[in-house]
Structure formats: C-alpha cells, structure tokens
Length: 443
Image (spheres, rainbow, N blue to C red):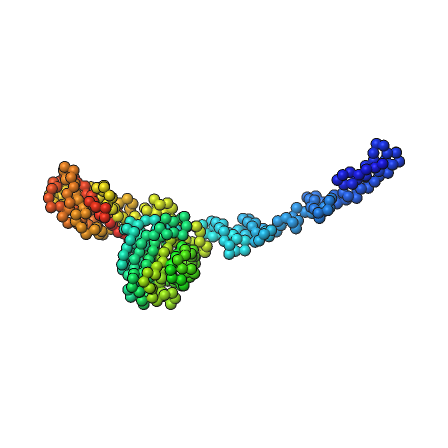
C-alpha cells in the first residue's frame, strides 16, 4: 500500500505492495512531481527564480532586475548613490560636482546632500577657549576686547555692559561660554548690543562667491527676536547682511543656524581693499526688529560660533583645529604674558643702557599679523622689576615703555632708580600675579 512523503505528499510504493499497486504508486508519484514542479519549467538565460506567493513550490522566472529588486534604471550617471526616501523606499542621490562631499541633510528627500567640502571655521576662538586679557570685564564701552578676538559693539543710551567667562555650556564640546549682561540701569534707544569679531580679509577671500552658514549656541533670559549682522567690509563697498533669530524659551540653550547669501568682492576700482574682510555681530542688535530697550540684568550667552561654506551647519570645529592651534591663531592678533603666583616670570632679556635704564627684548610665540605699535601694562611701576648682578630683583620706578617691534619680537625700556650696571645683561620679570604686558595687532 503506497504512503506519502512528509514534505510534499508524494505517493511512494512500499516493499509490501503488489506489483500492480507499486506501478500505480509510481505513476502517481511521477504525476505529482510533474505537477508540483511545473513552475521550474521554462525561463530564459539570465533569469532567476522568484517566490510568487507563500505557497510551497510557487515560483516564477524573472530577470535579475525584477520589481522587488533595486532597479538598474534608478541610477542615471557615474557616481549616483542609492539611498532611501522612506522605509523600504529606495531613491537616488545624484552625483555631486567634482570635489564636493556627501553630508547628511534631513531637509532633502533622501536625507543626503552634496556640498563643497567644509573649510576651516572663519571665526577664531568661536568656542571661547582663550581669554588672554582676563575673564571679567565690567562696565565696558563699545570696542573693548574681551575673550580673544571678540569685542563689545554697543550703541544707544546707557549701553555699557559686563562681559564674563561662564562655565554654563550647551554640551560637552565646550568648556566656556561668553556672557554679555546689561548693568543695573536700563539701556534705551538701543541700536547695537553685540559681541563682534572683525575677520581678516585673507580669511574671507576663499569664501567669496560662496553661500555661507553661521551657526552657534545661544541662551538668553529675553525671548523674541535677537539679531545678527555680517558687515561686508572686504571692500568699502561691501554689502551688509542683517537678520533676526528667535529665542523661544528663556534661560535655555538653543542651537541657531543662519544662511548668509554668497559673499562677493566689490570691484577694486570702486572701493579700497582694507584689512578687515568681514565684521560679524551677534546679540541684542536692533535694526527694525528686536529690542529698542534692554532692562537691567538682561543677558545672553553664546558658544560654538562657526562660519563656514555651505547651507547646512556641520559639527563645530575650532579655526585652529586644536586648543594649541586656536591659541596660536589668537596670538597672531594679541599676545599677553601675565604674572604667576610664587614665580618671578621672566618677560624678556636685555642689556642695561645705563645705571637706571635697560632695554628688554621680548620674543613673541608666533608671528603677529602686523607689527605692534604700543605696549599694554598695568600702570603700576612696582609690578615690574629688573635683575641686578647679584641676581636680586630691583623694582621699576616707572612703567615699561614701548620702544619698537617687529612681527616676531618687541623692545621695551625698563627704568629703575639705581642698582644696575651699564653694559651688563639683565632680565625683566613681574612682581605680582596681576602684572602683565600685552602687544596688539588686532583689526
């Protein structure tokens, strides 16, 4: 008596079957195999089997470019990339221009976009790592430099402000932020209440003709429209770009991105090229929008400022690449050496021109942008000293004065009442932790 196979139910004769029964079972087996495997028949060269349904042995012959595969026709040119526009929906990202790179962009249909490779952040010290001049600036006027490369830019009535270094930051990518705060009195008729960075023309030149994106983290107690301005001073005929961004929630860090249309040069015949390529302002600025008055203790904090080529902001990167590189970039514009507790910090080596005056040479750590023309100091003579032949310090009787400089070094005169020997070598140093010397090549 024939039985059936467990998988396909084919009739199979048994050893105990009669001859006639076995022949019948064999015939039934052949018919079943022929019927159930009929889908394997046919096909042409290059075709493959594809499941037609969930039913056993239900197949069809298809080309390799079938409806359930990514179609060859979806790509149109060398370099096209297959992505997805949604779950289970393949889509093409067409090849970009030579030299462009692929970036994620949630605003596009495929979530991908080609753009010009990221150039170095045009904003130096955008993460506020370097504070050579100090970390607290009280009741300052417009044009006062604070964190390296940044200065105040205020206009109106009672707009002097406080600028301080803060450890309140938006994320782990920052150690510090910069805070601008109104004093205890109200400011009125406000047209500017910004931090500002003048950007050198050599930084802006590679950006000419390209669309830029400005990004930063921002926090304020004052909700509403805050403002930015990119002052096009590459040439005196440059075009200002102004606009607003919205602070939605008070006292909350918010990430802002602002598109700046292509920066272009003005014909040299109609304008004179100057050192400054662009002036960037961010803050409470009022230009038909924003605030005309600022109340006591209104503030904003800012971190991770970046200006780069493209229309979508990329993750923040320092202009100098590393902390060391950022410090060197800052020192190209400003160099300050400061006293250290318990240490007589040498400020330079020199020679005694007389029994009371020594000329001291100070080497800059990096070449400065231009030759400094002045020396910054505390205004207190006793903050500085010279070393006599016995190795003892002699306090200065007047503050150090600027003599001359190059881009790599500066000469200063130190004066004491007595105690040094004309023609002998000497060195200068500080006597307090608040002592400092500074040289500026700022824009």
